Image (tube, rainbow over all chains, first blue to last red; front, side, top):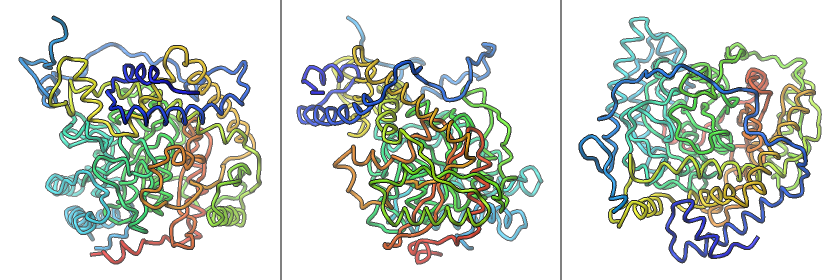
Length: 95
Length: 489
């Protein structure tokens, strides 16, 4: 399938990526090639086949909702690019 | 000290007090130092931490508190497994400063078994690649030929073991990332059944496919390591406790009556003639030892790679959404608002292959395309699983090559992604079906490069794989790359 500029723009929004013009052209080419290649699956008749996510039967695993770890706040914040008063600091999200 | 010892052999010498834990750690750290300039298998080397830990482990061994076969033996961990306080980068710029506050369960289990961690190994960025060339920290070289790739994505782990920088390592396998580099580097690597080893603390790529496993010099080591790291973990609800986890009990040189199937469709076009000959010769060895070997048609082989790349990319696009410059990792220097920060951080932090897969994954999950691509791939996965189920009604073990060729030249694959993906033809279906598989050396081509043999078995039947591969191993000699011999200390 042919990938248009609009598709690349849309995928960029979904993937939260900002591409240079050169990267966009390359992405168009790569994605067209890849979709053409994976289109091979259309040769297969999968009518009536259940989509499979897990290959052996495990079911929902339940446990009591009990806190087992201690207070890790400061430990977690050590990796934060920016922090303020015990919280992650991010740019303003609304005016 | 002899750096060519296996992990279990070294463990024995430590137990018998022939070698101290500190001596062993120092010897491998010196080996790393001497070879890294040429191999680049490591992202992080922790000499100070390892030597301190070695002393501590010696104390535990002397006090009889740690007694297992791996007690005191140094290990390297692929850089996508979290270790408390140790840099964990996934070979990406976006995690270039990330020091986790917790340790992956598999690594914790090794530590409990007395492991001494010497460092973190290089990989394809976020495990996306088959050559270790997509690493932000430079490519790893193959110790058999420094102009060739070690395979990937666990290329650092496989190269480190082959170069005798470390007796064994942990890798992870989403589409062949343990088995293929083990094959290219002439060492032994095992991908356990999905669910056998906890994925807690493994930075996710394709969560339904990822599995941690050992890379070592032989089958005995792999069995011992797997015994140490497997088991149910409350922190990974897909992990299970299944019988048949006394892996070392399967180290018997006996394959009488073992039914081995060879998929004809693995030996068609694209397979290198020397690889084919070596793999068929290995089958012959097992047959002579009493296994019943026959050829069969597995079917659907050509659909495994398309299905894999849809599923893995879809899961990757979701899993990698968390890297946005807020809680950890790299954040772009300048931005106008929150969304601009996300986008710039991710665009600067991820390399081309990661972006390619995130975009493909976002696309196949997007409305309008979800059914045509993602659901189609999941239905194909069901058919592939059924094909294996039918095969395992007749056979205990499936035998074939690991990869169509031996190690490729550096730079050969990057220009054409689909060509690189095609190299995974024999490995990806195993992840789709959740099966266990091993890769071990079965010969050498005319360039002197190792050839890998792959053995597969039913879910949770790693023991049949261990039994067959151990028996085969008794008939061949472990070869060391000239690089390791020449640079030996």
